[in-house]
Image (cartoon, rainbow, N blue to C red; front, side):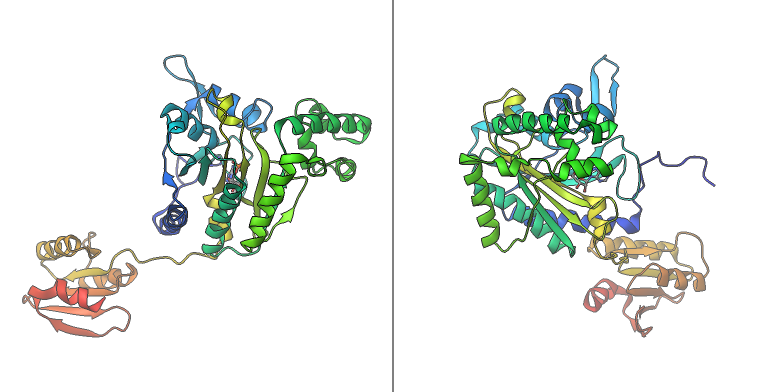
Length: 410
Ligand code: AMP
């Protein structure tokens, strides 16, 4: 039993688990790269005020889930709980509003939320995300949805459901919120205590409740989607038509609620029913007011984030991969074996040797376990043999030409 364990809600990523993660990143980079997105990295922590303002004081994330602390200089610092506000901060800080718009950015990294841990929900987790800032065109809404759809399907995730909604403009949303508050107050006695306590602060979250009677009340509640009008309705109709034309299936979900305050207009989420209670793989939406809220010029934008751990859970079990191509076995000449390993690596061929003082037989076993496709056996008399670990076939090779032989065999 180890004396120390990884903190609650965190996990180690072991070498055999890294290949699948690297594959998710490489595939994401390829898909978003084809659409002109460049990678951005922002710090793991930011001023607390960025999230308080950017994510919203009324959200669960800001109220309960942030890892916030004071640094040595007395500043309030928060480990980033999400990526959109930091990317928008960077967009402004680096004057990206002066570049040709939209500016298309993607990111990958760790995020932190103090949540109740369970499978698929951690306190430190990883996301891939994309943000397209500086265009209000419905084409961009369709583009970002299609990109995430393509990434998830391309990674082999099936049983996906795309839920789509629109929140309309901020003004429409405010008017709707007032209407919803009135409706909730009229049914107050049937609502859960938690929902009742948040009628003023965040009435939309009532749609998220799993309290039986609250759900009954919400089934009859007015929805924002029914209240869309004018340009908001036109925008949403165009986004839907573009998704239809691209063959991306979706379900309209007027009760879709996401835990961040900055969204307007298009809102979407991908669920996978391979996952248990935590079925959300990724999602996002338009946030046309956020940049202005952070002190910049009025700038329309849209983006999404998807959880890498959820993606991995939703994918078929990834294949473990052998890490080296060649394993060098030698009776006595460790220096010669080591020199050969270095020569192979310099030639771009993964190679390893015994580092635990194993017997000849033990080394052969280790060669097998290493997953290498070939073993090179250096004999005491200076000769060498090449063994195909798959077939067990073995033949003598010229000791001076081992690198070429392995390259030819792979
Ligand atoms: P959000 O930033 O809340 O919209 O989350 C986007 C995606 O990140 C979700 O769909 C999940 O896949 C993933 N995610 C969010 N919170 C967690 C968490 N605590 N643990 C693991 N994955 C998470």
